[in-house]
Length: 143
Image 1 (cartoon, rainbow, N blue to C red):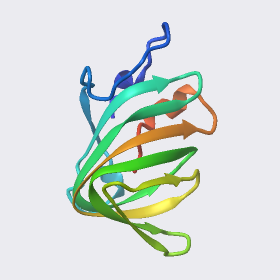
Image 2: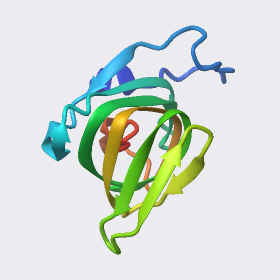
Image 3: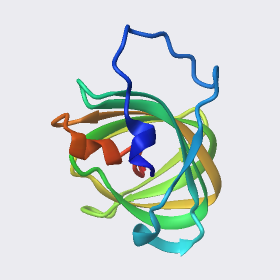
């Protein structure tokens, strides 16, 4: 993910409607966590509040299996399209999520995601400690 695309320009508060105007799609390189398949991940980041360490956007992923860790942040997700099977690596419990489902992945959670075809979600990320180092997180799965 390109860090320069994540920087929020400080200015007056805004009302942000997802998709209007469209945000640029950024390819998230998560190849280090890829287990199988292609699992290409795209992110549209609509807001990055540096003061609170919060990010708001949309994420999509093609078919594949990959690992994800909520490293220093908690994420709320709402599935818009598709489905995934998410395995908690700590206790091996499995959750299946589908379009219409909402859930939270807490900081420290380590998972394996299996996306059979495609998935798309809206996300809100809250960093534990807002800092420039957290700018590179952007919807991990997240991401």
